[in-house]
View 1 (cartoon, rainbow, N blue to C red):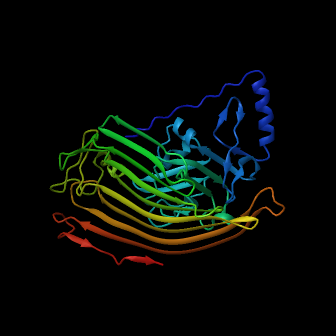
View 2 (tube, rainbow, N blue to C red):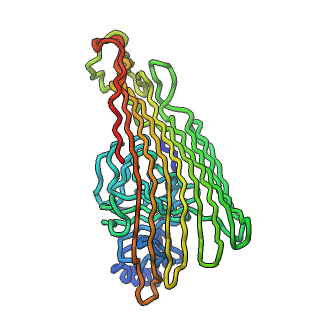
View 3 (cartoon, helix red, strand yellow):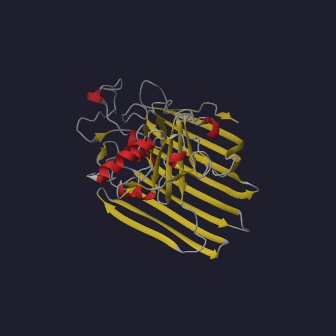
Amino acid sequence: MNMRKQKNPRCVLSGTAAVAALSVLSAANAQPANTGDQTGGALEEVVVSAQRRSENVQDVPISITALSAARLEETGIQDSRDLPLITPGLRVDSVGAYVQPAIRGITTTLTSGPEANVATYLDGVYRPNTFAAIYDLPDVKQIEVLKGPQGTLFGRNATGGAILITTLSPDLNTTTGKVSAGYGSFDTINANGFISVPLVADRLAFSLSAYHDDVKDGWKRNLVTGQKKGAGIETGLVRGKLRFVPVEGADFTLTALYSWRNDDSSYRASIWHGNTDLAGTPGVIIPSQPWTYAVDPDVAHDSRAEDVSLRGDIEVGPGTLTTTTAYSHSYADLTFDGDNTANGLGLNTTDTTIRASRRSWFTRPTNSVRSGLWAVCSFSILKATTNPIFFLPSATSFGSGTRLRPTPRSVS
């Protein structure tokens, strides 16, 4: 069940405010950007990093949708799958933990193999996986959706565009925090929080964010086991950051993230009017009532992600050298019924990705004579493994029970 609340934004213009809005729109036609923030009829200044440096969104010659934390909260956006609701041209398809974003129709097949044609960056770290790619947003600072090819600055798989997710950094001088909790239908429990604490003024600070959402009850009944399921969604994350400023002009942030998602709601289905080759086979149960299904094995889809990254911003002469070093380990385990009956025909597959990467770039301020991005260097090591196991039934014409384990595929 989709528990998210969506609010419809409304805008009222009258009199001189309409004239002011028309002048703003005329100036914005040359640099189209949807900032998502408006106060008193005048657009607030929105700073983006679409060109790997901080700039006013109106000065960037790219079609951008920039979404602040306030905008995401007021529209009820809870995770990255909700972004198309307030982002024109963006679509996010998902089945369980597998996700495939598309911008302006540029996409690829939604499977565990291909990487997306839209590059996703989380705090500057490239996330190529189609699994473990639903990003909860308890501590988000800003999201930028860049539309159109972005390969020059963001490398491969940015044909359709790029999604840049930036989370809150520790505050060096002030203790800040927030917490919220809720309870809803189908025994849904939601809680999230963020806290930032300075350890040494102007030098060292730490932040911790956590999120947990659990839909325990369901609305479909498995006729094989008698259990009532249908939601089966549990998701959460814990993210810690340590920010260190050893000297003036040098800023380092160490980030550690652990996230998990158990989502089998997309794989429970019933045979349409009993249309299956196994109908009439002894022991096979064909559901005939709404909100019932009969599967064996029951569906399970778990994913995990473990990330560690270090980002440094160092002022060097007339510009800033930025470097990001990251290690990520993503894992997904999927078990589902192959024929949507109680006959024991199913598939279990595991996907594992281990990735180490490093990216560096040098920028100069926009007000300098030779402003812009001077160099981008990147290096990455990737190992991906897919290991499917097929289950054949033991009481049908297929013969005795069998587990088929194809040779794992590894790519480095």
